[in-house]
Image (cartoon, rainbow, N blue to C red; front, side):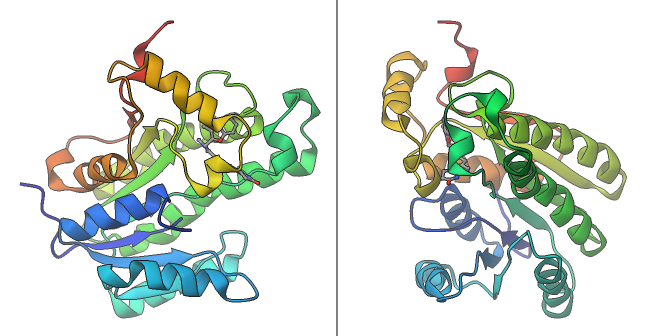
Length: 258
Ligand code: 0WE
């Protein structure tokens, strides 16, 4: 049975009730995990208030600011985990950012700084958080990240994020190879398009969702909770033999040729 009781899980990337990370946090909680939640702090404290109100029903035992562009915040996040939890079992990485101008128009026009930003926030952050979690995953563990088909196919306008996700998927394999001997598993979930804060800011997302509804074998898109269930499975002992994989949770869209 799927049972995460006694497991400490850190979930990153919750911005609002549409976040895929929110779907994951709810399903990890349902499976009995003890949660730590991080949020992206802003200077007005709006995110802190919004996310803390949202996650209150899951009664997280840790609620911490963590901007991955800030090394000290990452250090302090894992120092708090060490002091309060002693060990961590599950790390959920749901972070990505590219500048808006780099998610439209010609990929060849991507600026150096736009390229660097996308790969720093969306790709390096997995490496960085995994490295910080490693010494605290003393009883083995499971690391999950979110990716997208644009890593392996040229999807219009996804552009630099596709390169970032390709790097992320390769990072999953290198991390899995390194951390396997410590019984730490690392996997990616490639979710189909879902309406979230991030995707709604993208022109044409509704047309993409409509296309998936026509073409995907299940003739629909997936929900945050379906991604959450897959994450709960991958984090659980039910998936004890699975590492280094990218699992598609996309209503089957990826298998289709036309
Ligand atoms: O990975 C993503 C979204 C990532 C994302 C979205 C934004 C919008 C607002 C990263 N950075 C930003 N920066 C912003 O300023 N997805 C898988 C959703 C998504 O994004 C797309 C898609 C899909 C699907 C962008 C272009 C085309 C398709």
